Amino acid sequence: MLDLIIRGGDVVTPQGVARCDVAIAGETIAAIAAPDTLPAQSASRVIDAAGRIVMPGGIDPHVHLHHVWIKPDGTPLITAGPEQVGRAALHGGTTTLIDFAYWRDGASAQAAIESRDKDFVGKSPCDWAYHIMLHSEPPPEFAAELAEAIQAGYPTLKIFTTNILPSRTGRMIDFGDIWEAFGVLAREGGLGVIHAEDNDIVMHMYAKLIREGRVAFEHLADVHNALSEDLSFRRVLRLAESVPGAALYMMHVSAATGVAAIAEARKKGLPVYGETLHQYLNYTSNDYRRPNGQIYHTYPSLKSREDQNALWTGTADGSIQTVATDELCCTLKDKTVGKRIDDTTGGNSGVEPRLGVMYTEMVIRRGYSLSKYVDLVSTNAAKIMGLYPRKGAVAAGSDADITILDPTRRGQVRAADLHETDYTPWEGHDIFAWPQTTMLRGKIQVENGRYLASPRDGKYLKRKIGSEIRSRAAL
Ligand SMILES: [Zn+2]
Image (cartoon, rainbow, N blue to C red; front, side):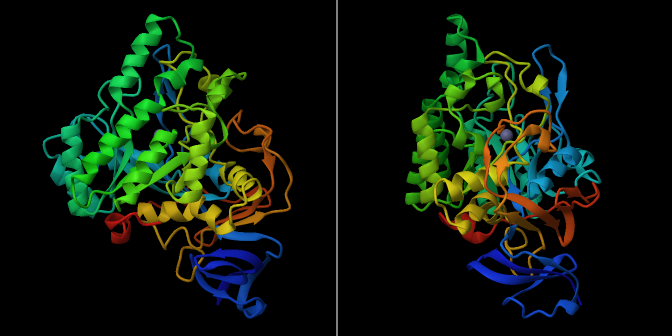
C-alpha cells in the first residue's frame, strides 16, 4: 500500500525532467512511474500536480541558527533558532539545513556536537546536520578526535583563515594547523569547508580606514576585498594541493578572484567545490548605500558588478556548485544595530525566499534548465556534503523530501508574507514560482500556505562524503 501518489507533475529526476507520477510509501519514494500507471486506489491520497514542478526539497548547506552575535554595546544577540527558521525554510521549500557545531576552548569534538544538539534536538521541523567548526587553536588530541568524528558521521570541518573582525581574535587557524587538518581529512574521508580571507589584508584595511575616519559600513567592500579573496583562496588551495586527497569546499565565494582560483584548481583535477550566496548573486556593494543597507551584507562583503558577473558565470560553467544563504535570522533592528565596518551584523535572512528568488533569477531571467537550478539549490549540496542519494534526488529509494513548485504564481516577495522575521532583503523581488507543497520524509509539512509540521519532525543526518567527490573535481 502506498501512502501518496503525486500525479502528473513535471518531475526533476536525476535523469532529467519528465512528466510522471511519484509514489511514496512511509518516509521514502517507492517508485517513479509513467503517468497514470499507478492505480489511484493503491494509495491513501493522490495529489494532482499537473502544471506543477516536482523537485527534491531544497538543501541549504550554510546556515547559523540560534547563533550568538555580540552587538556593538557588548550584549549578545541570540538569533532565531531551528523552530522559527525551520518553519520559514519549509514554507520556502527547503527541507534540510546544515549548521555548525563549535569546537573550541580545549573541549572535545564530541562535546561540540553534544552542546549543539541542545539547540536542535526536538526543536527542528527540518532535517539537519552540522559542520564541525574549529573555533580556537586545535587541542592536542585534535587529529585523533577529528578522525573519530569523521568516522562517526560528522565528516566536514569548517576552518577560518581570518578572524574577520578586529575584535574577534581566536577563530583564525594558522597554516600549520590547517596543514595538519587537511592530512586528517584526506586520510579519513573528510572535507574541509573553508572561510578564506587574507587576515593581513583585512586587518590592514581595518586599521587604515579607521585611521582615515572612513568607518561607515558602506566601506565594507574596501576591507573584505577581492585581493584578500585572491590571496587567501590561492594560499589555501595550494596547501590542499600539497596534501594528496585533501578535498575542499570554499564557502561564500564573493569575488571574481575566488571564482578564478577555484576554476584553476578544478582544471588541475583537484577535488575543490565552490559555494556562493544568493545575495552575492543579486546585490553589489552599491546596495550598501540604500536605506538599511546592512540588510544586504554578510562577511566577507558584497563586491562589484564585475565580481557578480563572474559569480553568475561560475554557476553556469561549473566553478560554483551551490547557492546557500549564510542564514542568520534576526530582526531589522538587530541587523542594522551595527553601523561601522567593524561592528555590522553578519549573516542573512533568506532561507524562505531562496528557492523562489533563485527560480526567477536562474530559470526565468537566465534560461537555466530546471535540472541546473535544482542542482544549484539542492542536489549538488547533497552530493558534496555526503547526503546523496538519500537527499537531493526524486528517485526510488530516496527520502521523500519533495517540494511542489507552482510556476503560475506571480507577485513580489513581501516580508509580511514570509515566516522568517520582520524584514527581508528580497522585498519587492519578482516571483515566477513558489512552493505550494513541502514534504519531509513523506510527511506534508506545508500545503497551500498551511503549516503542518512539528518541531519534533526533524532528524540529525549522519553523513559520509563519497569517494567520487573526494578524489577529483566531480560535478
Ligand atoms: Zn556563515
